[in-house]
Every structure is written in structure tokens, then in C-alpha cells.
Length: 137
Image: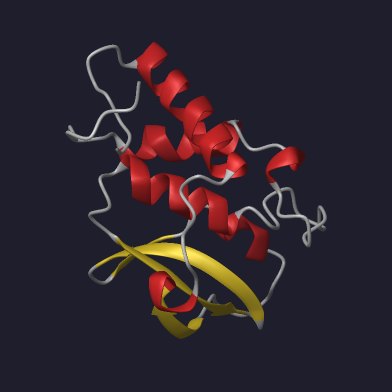
């Protein structure tokens, strides 16, 4: 069962569990595995983080090094779960053409990919931390 009432979530643990539960079957059909294992997972990773933290952050989209990218913002703090895919670039990471994800895309919470990763992450989180429940309704 997925719960609506949110309890403070351990962000570092949540990010680790999201990364551990990524698999190629979660990539959008137009994205194929790239040079880096995190390539193509920015959208679904950020969406799951946003959902599991009670939608309290801003879900953002824009470009990084000319590539379409998605991340989460908390005021001035950027939470970029797949940032390591940009490690091979020599220049600093710059988030450009930023806009609220919801103004550009319609978020389909019934997407099988989102449901699958959300189920994996919430199950793993509950096994580690029996008292906290994460998710959305």
C-alpha cells in the first residue's frame, strides 16, 4: 500500500535506493543505454524522488551540457540524482533553460515504468526503515 501522509524521508537513503533499483526496462523507449549507466534515467529518478518526498520540492527540466535533463530543486539547492553522467565533461555543470517540469510535460503517475520503480523503491525503503512510509496517493 502507498501512503499519502508523509514522514520525513532520509534523502540520502532514498537516492541510493532509487539508483540501486534502476534497470534498462525503466528507460523510455526513445532512450537507449548511453555511455554512462545513469544516462536516460534522470526523469524517472527525479519523479520518484519528488513523489517519495511528498512533492515538496520543484520538479525541473532544462538542459545540462546541451542535453535534455530533469532534476529536483529545493530553493537554491539542486538535487540531481543522475549528475554523475556529466563527470566526463571538463566544464562545470550548468543548469540552463530551466522550467517547471509540469509546464512542459504532463506527468502520468499511472505509467507502468513509474509504478514499477516506485514499488521497488518503497519496498526497499520499508525493509530498511520499518517505521517510515513513503509514497503518494
